[in-house]
Amino acid sequence: MLEAFNISLSFDKPVLKNISFKVKKGQVMGLVGKSGAGKSSLLNILAGHLAPNEGEVHIESKKLTDPTELLVPGYEQIKIVSQDYQLDPYHTVEENIREALISLPESEKIKRLRQLMKLMKLENIADIKAIEASGGEQQRLSIARAIALKPLVLLLDEPFSNLDAHLRANLFDHIRKLRDEEGMTIIIVSHDGQDVLGLSDFIHFMNNGKLGARKTPFNAYYNLKHLGNSKLFGIVNQIKFEKEKIRFRPNEFENGNDIRISYQNSVFLGTYYLNYFLTKNNEQVILSSNRPLNKMQSVNIKKKIFKGKQSFET
Image (tube, helix red, strand yellow):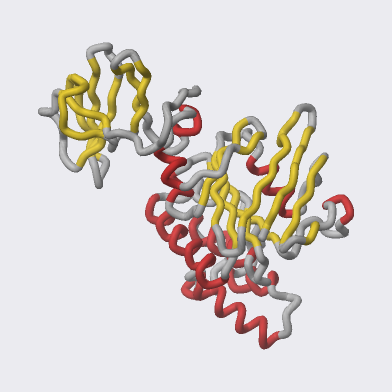
């Protein structure tokens, strides 16, 4: 189990403010927030590359050494994959992994090398230089190096930011295998909530250095109380209905007569359409569907399953 207790960090101004959380072995935690929210700083503290002003990091109920007391920055039990990949660009893919395994006896090194090449699907590019690998291949190689010596925790900082849709889908699969086959605890940081929804057991929002309450992926997506957080997961409609403000996702509608809407246009996005409407108050409404909704003139909003009346925040 990885635990953070009351982590605070300041430079010219506060960066992290009294952050505490825990992640059990084999769980995946999503950490979502806008750029500058403090996400990367928190990862670097967890990895032992940055010392907090206050607070402690524990793993398996043992306090980790303060980073200022480490001869070499970083914890062996916790590895981070940053956005720059930190590869040896002019060594081959295989040589990059071998470097990370240098402390192992040769027989164990060969066995682990083969495991990692297979797990991250790097066998076919073993002999090419890292600099010649694609972005997705470099990403997988960086992860292979990070997990070479089987750390307990893997930290991924914006792992999907430079990948196209196909490569993102492949990386999703590789991360699942890390959890399932290596039993690894994983924290994924992203400014795009869509990146963590399908992978995370739970999600935290980070805003201005503060960590929000733990949420299930379903609640993180459909509870639209905080507009800024909600928009990190995609489109949010906001209109006034019966003198109240309501928010809903593009798929949260059904046939009905509650809200009159005027069709504007539809955009085809491959697996679905986005349909644009205006209400009588000239508010934009965007609905998703598997066909154009050019004949739709009114809808009902699906009722939320959350208990209690929500007070909305921006």
